[in-house]
Structure formats: structure tokens, C-alpha cells
Length: 352
Image (cartoon, rainbow, N blue to C red; front, side):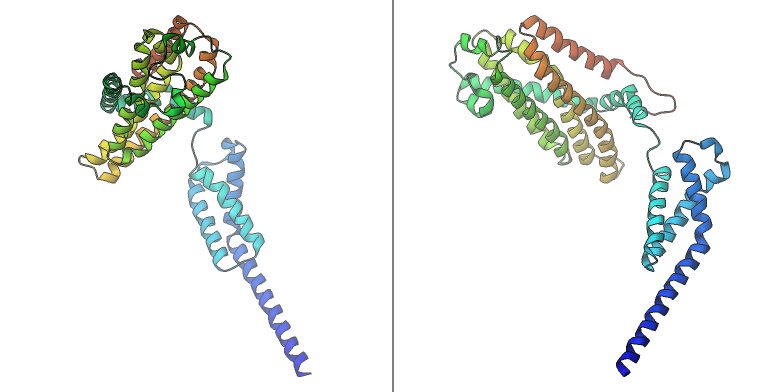
């Protein structure tokens, strides 16, 4: 009997605790429900695009109401209120957050601003680093050529194995020419093109990502990558195929190498800002440079996609040198015109 008494007392205590928790939850909700409902009404109207039906007072109160409801959610979590109240508050806070702190523009609006001048301004803002990167790329090409000219064994050190195949020192002009023409249906050319694109895309990403190390890794990567180009130029030049090889490379290379140039410049820009922050702190200078460089890299991704399409389709469909030059240097002219001739500055915006 004593055991039954104890069990009955425990059950009564549990029931009293549950009732107290329910009362506490109801009281908590009643005290704050007015603010929740007001915020939910504002959020619902804004989500449906009914901005005209929202009063100025409600718009001004939106951030205040958001913080009030967020505070209610914090209390609800700490005091273990009922799951239904917590789920409601979590959903409402999430919806309100996107309206208070979320992006203020649509995807189309962002694209319009990006292509409408933001990308070109960011590129022009890092022009000193672009000149350094260009000088390094030219120097790397010359170094690769000269090393192979002095000792052909350097070719195997500079050119990755997957790029060599029949393209090796000692190959005849006929063999090398076959790698440039009459290969529109050849699977090997597609594999080589995919490997070259993957390699160059990786170089572009690394040039930017390693820029924080005071710009040293991008310097090395730019020289190393273009030394490979110099070695390939030396190989084809030796058999009198320089003009044809440059045309073969240009159909996608003008875009792809330009993308590498931009990524190298972006990485150097971040590194230079950290090494020479001026009157700013290192972190502030790096943050500002990183934002500008990130805009450049967003465009680099687009350029690499375009280069991939040119490499995958253009090179397969165009099998004569003059057409390759027209496409390749036509693309280069378009990029240069956009970056350095297109100087539209939206009203009220500042140059990067």
C-alpha cells in the first residue's frame, strides 16, 4: 500500500509539473503574441510583394520586432517551452531574417550590376598587379623556350606527361602537324583539350587562393605554367609550325590565358595589400583587397567556362588556322573592349 501511495504521489507531482509548464508557456505566449502576430503580418505582406499595404510605421518597426521575436525564441529555448511554440518562433525568425539582413537585389539585378561595370572596374583597379603578372607570364614563356633550346631534356621536366603523347623532342613535322589538323573526330584531342583546360583552371584557382602568402606563390605559378607554354612553342617552332600551333592554341587560349592573368593579378593584389597595407591594418587592407579580387575571380570562373566551350566545340569544328585566329583574337578583342573600354559607372556608385 505504501508503494501505491508513493506512485500516486509521484504521478500527482508529474501532473502538477506538466500543468505548471503549460501555464508558463501560455503566459509567455500571451505576453508576447501581439508582437509575433504583427511581425508575421508584415513578413507575409512583404513576401507576397504587397509593400504598398505596409505602413511606414510598420516598416520602421520591422527590425525592432525582429529582435524582439528573436529574443523570445532565445527565452523559449532556454526555458524548454513547448515544441510548437519553439517551431513557430524559429520559422518566423528565419523568414524575418531574410527580409532584414538578406540580399537587397534579385539574381538578375546582381547580374546586371556585375556585367554593367562592376567586374570591369574591379579588373581596372588591379592594373599594376596585372602588369606584373603579364611580365611574369612573358618571362616564363621565354625561360621555358630557352631552357629547352639549351637542353631538350628540360622539355620532359616542364611539360606534364599527359600533354606530351606524340609531342616530344625529335618528333617530325608531319607527326606534329597531325596533332593540329585533321583531328576533329579524334578522341585523343578531346582528352588532351580536357586535360589542358583542367590544368589551367587549377592554376588560375591556385594563383588566387595562395595570394594571401604575400603574393609569392602566384609569382611562381605564373612562371611555371607559362614555362610549359614556352617549351611547347619551342617544340613546334623547331619544325616550322609556330604559326599553326599559335592558331591552334589561340582558339581557346586567348580567353584561358587571360583568365590566368586575371587570377594571378588578383592573387598578387591580395598579397601586396597584406605586405604593404599602408595606413590600414593588415586585416582591413586584406579584406578590402579580397573583396575586389573576389569580384575579379567571379568573372574568371565565367571566362574559364567560355574557354572550355571554345576548347570543346570550337577547336573540334574549326580545322584551319585562319579561322582559329579569327575566333581566338576576336574573343581577346571582346575581353579587352569590355575591361578597358567599357567604363560605365552606375549613378551613385563608387569605383572599386
